Length: 122
Image (tube, rainbow, N blue to C red; front, side, top):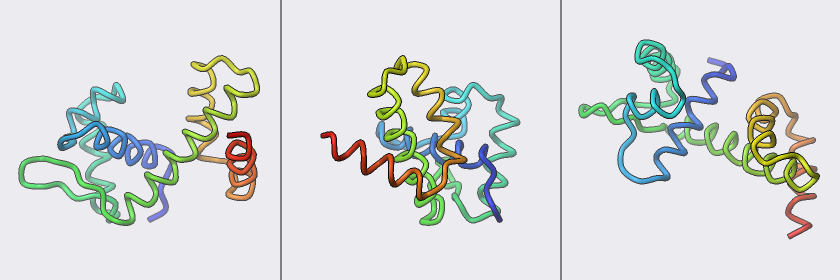
């Protein structure tokens, strides 16, 4: 199952929330993303059937290896792109919003070049 941008966003959100500690539940995703419970429930079901996450008996959402790989890739892109855009003078809030859109469509080659540029400046 090829993931759409929205699926990648859900996986990234679950990863980010898990970094804050504790388990991640659907309601946490609803709150963070500003989506309704039915929307998140449908997305969770699709991601589960695609093998990207599992749902524990207590309702906790856990990324599978495949889900974690995608989530980490998208999160890294978001972080690096936000930093790059800010460094070239984009307002930080705008940089985060733009990075959120760009992270899903940028080629691996272009992202790696930007990543190399940002890391070389450290």
